[in-house]
Image 1 (spheres, rainbow, N blue to C red):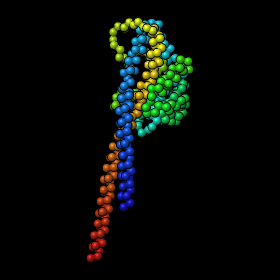
Image 2: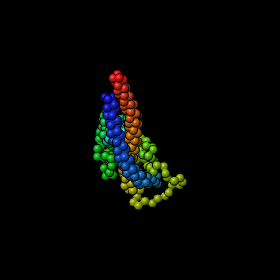
Image 3: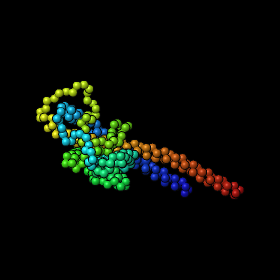
Image 4: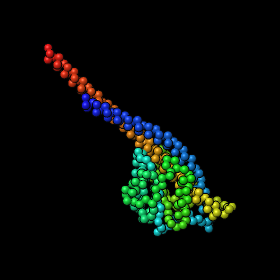
Length: 291
């Protein structure tokens, strides 16, 4: 009886785990739907803003902006790593942190610069790898607000303009579809106008513009807005990718718990059948001995 009771306890424990993982899967699915909508809604605005900045920057000679151009050689870089606060999301955090570590190892300016992190999981792994974390941003959570992201982007713009840092790169998970997410190292500052809009500009002769106010004044408003929009898009992509990873991980855990429950049930039935057979044999043997 001891063995069958032990199997029953394991069956009960596996059943409880299955209920928990199924509930977490349902919650992740619900959050994924909302986060996906937010990520998709912001993409048209970001893309249109990027295309407008690209067209302005290439419209004529003499148009310059301090936030445009290439990274400053020999200057310190700032690397922002976007991870999650919670685990149980499969390889999501590991993939992002691995990409960040490879970037820091391959780029001396980033390795000698400042590293900032979003999310508890990334902060713990970076500190374990003896990487000094300059700032740990905890204000974003599962639903990053545009105001919080805007303040962070403005801080980077101010530090870049003052010459404190020469480039800002963001390491995060980019969302393409529910079946495809990919870690990337994105250059936030300085803003690359030639890559704005994702290469969707039409081929042919460049259009001519008349600017009112002048192009430099327009870029003074549009470039910071584009940088803030891109950082907000990075956060949105990271959140929806996290929910997808947790949804897949919890579904896999639920399926595995179900398979283990069936295996334990078969094992319990065999043990119980063996016990019943032994008890019947003992009863028959006792009755035969009394004859």
